[in-house]
Length: 360
Image (cartoon, rainbow, N blue to C red):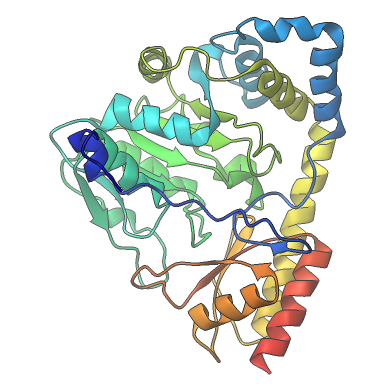
């Protein structure tokens, strides 16, 4: 590839590689942690209403600050609208977080095993990082996060391990690092058994250095609409607003805003499907353990499992040959683990059936 016209920055980048989206018939796709259920029917009604009422409005720009969506989110979480920020998927929100808070002369602290987009953002924005190793059980040890730093970021539940850090430990991090922003990426938090006691949103009024990032892609089943959120004190939200409006002043289109609002307003459907995924995760974990897998405790819509009879890479390839796609990472320490998204009952059954054949 001819890169002579590329900037030096573009030449130096190692882009993030998302989970593949294969185009095959009869594929059992368990590799990107998508929701196995459709979004609320009210989402489709809301999108239809936007178009039916006046499709001509699509020629007009949407609300630049997504005011109605921010207001609905604030009410839902018991916050003020000044504590809410939305963007084009949580990946864009995270990029703005890196640009707003981490471009400093001190290193960003992050787990050695976590969301693999973090090092990409760091490289993109010239942020120095210091990786902190997870402990032997793949949990984050907050006592390892010591010394001066330019910020801290981690996923909770962590990815790809699925492990959940107790809220008391997040409080410890915020107390110890008052001069740094602590970012808690809660993409999967709704799959914790008790979200009310697991989410760091409860700490926002207590600490002015916590940013909580969430997404509508997982538990809200809106990965195709690209809606991400950040919650923080008004000063940090103002910084994100300034950065957003220096980059993309209209991040959410009209349909995405309408879909997100409708999703929040259908609480009964949300809770029903959230609990269904939790039960499916428990059932999948039990079946994998019966096949000899070591499965880490998960608070997400995926499990992280280590086979005992055959290398993980070989199992992943054999599954693929049978049309079942999961995620295998070649990273040190986790090269013999498989990350398996929780599918619907039929998908999980197909996975277990094929795994049984492979291991036999």
